[in-house]
Image (cartoon, rainbow, N blue to C red; front, side, top):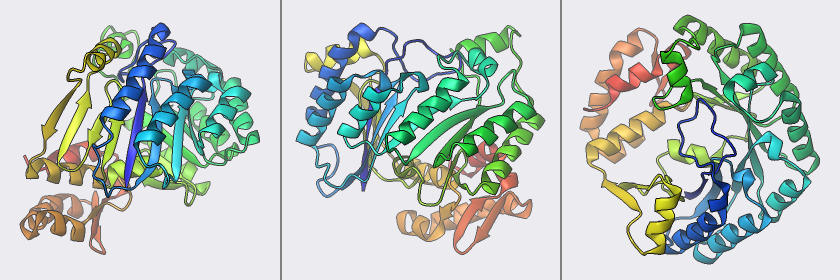
Length: 376
């Protein structure tokens, strides 16, 4: 199987915490869509001929800023140059304040069967600090409207460890999220990435980062609340009701090929990684002039091994030791098992049924564990 990712980099405004590539000049949108469709044609042979495309994901940025003709133009280009007959999941990221009858009807018309809604919080004062455009009430109404339009696979994004967030507001946000009967919840710890407004504000002591102890407490509340409500934690930051895991994102963690289309989009075909220019204007100009618009890196066996370990350990199943042996040999398996032993003895990793996975204790310090397990 394989997946297609479409990057729509436009935003009405840039959130203070976001370090993803985005652009606020919406006047470039039509030129970008035209260029994106040209890239779709140019890249039609990127995936192996025998790869079955099962997932399509519109991410951003803010894909919900596209209008009906934009979505139709992109989808028609994809249908022309790729075989979409085996698609089982089409996801579109939407902002709550963009959700209306026209948008939902448009998404239905391109066979979208999964929405990913960037809600982040159900408290207006927290949303204001994050720089989000919507209110808590708009988020609730957006989910309700999507459900009324027949969307039965809805994911919402939440954030925790916000500067002005309390244990109580986090509990209330989770309680409300659960009450809305959405099928999937992604919850991310706020990070202060260099170059963002939040990073600058933290450096200048305008806002204060949550300490590790409180962050762990918030994460424990997340796991407990969602698990008790019937959600399965299938990845460090992702929870779903049974059978509603994100098939597209799961493909990243299962080391399957995908093609990324659009400015700053990344692609992976087992042998190499490829990433497009992270500038709308330069991306459009290079493709219009038939010039190179991406960089490529051919992966060494060590890099493939590290990718496999990092992506596998993020999932609840963990590293499949049999698959590790098949892909990289017995020597790599022995090396990995040896590296894991200190964490197995301290109950941060669990080895069982030919899998090695993070325990809940290990999840809290997963980044430091992963750093020591990769082959440098």
